[in-house]
Image 1 (cartoon, rainbow, N blue to C red):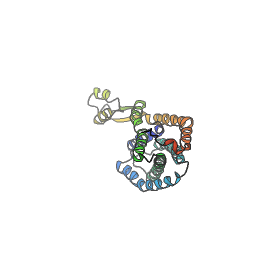
Image 2: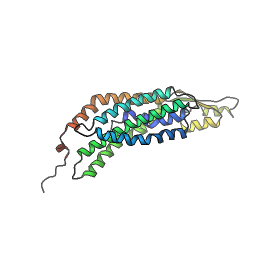
Image 3: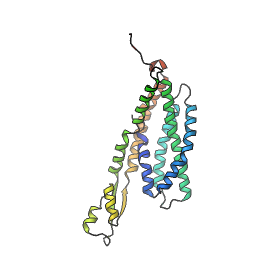
Image 4: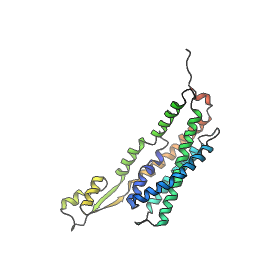
Length: 241
């Protein structure tokens, strides 16, 4: 439930920020499309790495990699060039997305392999479904708070040329440029949203910092303990009939 907090800002908001920086939606779709064949390869490799008594080892590797990519994408967005996006930078985005998705696939397959190993054959599929549902929930519930946090930390104002503004009230109403309503009002008034402080960087840094603390103090020791348990500990004990 807590293990995926570190890269939630990256996964929930990075693509939005890329579009905001000037990347075309069609180019973003191409970046995601190119990544698909590599996810298949990543799943196959992760399945091979998860064999044995250390099934969570690939998951831990993927954890560190995804935290690294969360920091890496902050740097990418910081130096993102003005539109149009140069081909070299677009190629960098494709390669970066491939490796980032590879780390995510390694984690997913590694955790699924661990669930397969510990699932009680008596209720097999039900056990695995429950474990995977809880794991997936850990990557879903933080997103609402992450996106709200990005907006809360962001400071953006609407800059409107007074000669283009229809009324002074419009300038005042368009001053806030964080919400969709504020952005729309600013655009309709002939203004431009200027971000003075981007909450993405602050929220992503907070998530990564919290994840590192959790990883070192709780997640790593717990993962090592869980994969060291004998299979009998995971079996359901039925009472006498």
